[in-house]
Length: 384
Image (tube, rainbow, N blue to C red; front, top):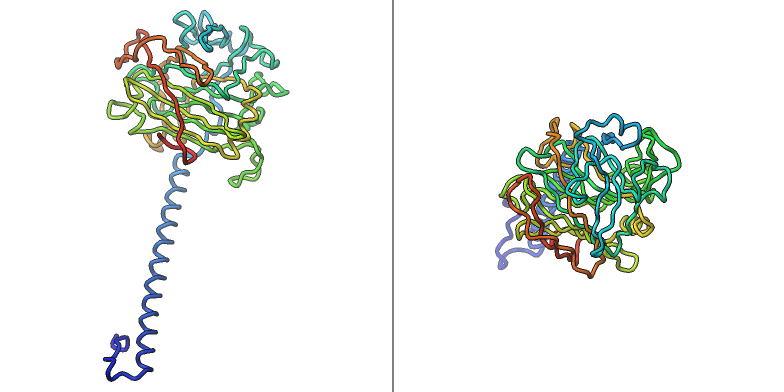
């Protein structure tokens, strides 16, 4: 208004100058307050949007839909899900060692595992389903090592929305058999099952690859009743345009790719670098150390049970919702193949059995690419 305009300095009394300056400062303060309020509202809107996204997709599975292979389930398994041999060959620093995934379909002279839902398998020293004894498990010590495999989902109609092909580590066996009679535990702490540390080395399908650390410190702001971090921290989720269905992504999930994971220890800290390669293209994602990773490192250095399997759910949106949406999902239940298993001491060359994987999703075994690994220098998760 007119009262805020300052008179000409030659004629204006001192009081009017002061009043004009006060009015100007008042306007500036009101403008700043308005801007701060808009910033606050904008942050609240973004926070609400993030909460809505989490609510839409969910955080983690409500139930464990995979079935362990025990003597009882082995008898009921259909022939296509039950292999003639469970012996898996793993290249450890150039030496081929034989272990077992009881009940799994191991093909290609022990080099590949064919996965079909809804089973999960444990890496064992002998072909036994006695999961009550810790000495029966083969528990690789991954800190200081790199784990590599070739993964093949075999084309556009392969395992997609609602499918979960995985390999992960848990601190089993626990002291009681639980509902599945396999002495199992994980960080979701399901009823009548054990509750323990869980490191998801990989879970995913043609749309997504996800790596998650589920430590058990017992102090979580999300829910004071949690013994373990059900949501995970850190978590790396690789989605389009980095990983997904089709050639428009850096890594095409419908074609064979090499997955490699390196565990580096720096004092009390743990860094995990995941590298995915395909046809000369490479993605690198890093989980840098924090309190949760330090907590997990203690268990990794002791050795944890290696679990791998394939399960389905209509609400797998917590994992693949970015590509598959928030609606009910229907897994194709098509098979997946994981082959050329390698565990290499860091500093040694990762075994390279043959040339680059063929871009064709042909059923015949294709070859893989040599990996190089590194890590990012900042941020808890990110790409290099």
